[in-house]
Image 1 (spheres, one colour):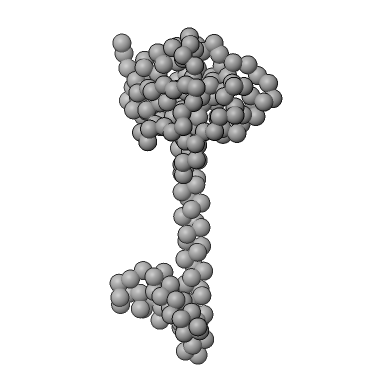
Image 2 (tube, helix red, strand yellow; image 1 turned 180 degrees about the vertical axis):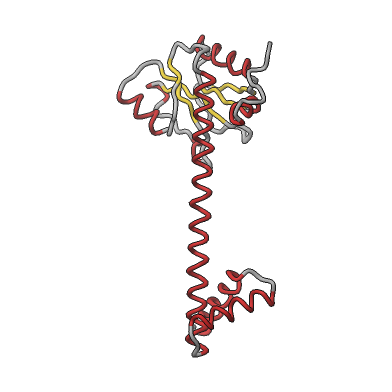
Length: 202
């Protein structure tokens, strides 16, 4: 059998073959077809039912049967710091099932009866969106950290300015010079000045 990707295939498609996929689904024809398709793609597969309190740390993606009897089950593995991407497998549509799928932050669903067509597409879109979300969260976190560092530097600059009777520009230059002399990040110097100032005010 020929591989399903070529040199031109986007990276996200090539990476799918290395995925470890958990299938939380009753042992029926749908699960058998889904597992067969995942094996054909090249994924490693583990199966669970009626629920999985915890999942192996190596799991990258979850196919989850969303059924009335499973809606009340607490998905503790969703409490991870980086929640796993989930593809719901739905047997029919109603407001409750749709809301459950939305609460899983699903980007795609697989409908029952499971067919070979659509599984690879669902995985590709889900993993692409998941990767984009993680990148966005990391970017937001970096921006928040930088903003916090700027506030610390501004606060330390104000402390130096007031305690030495100099302008804030001059205080910043002193802060920067200290950082360069000590070969220490300016943020650490600023933090030390703030901490020392707090101790003196006690």
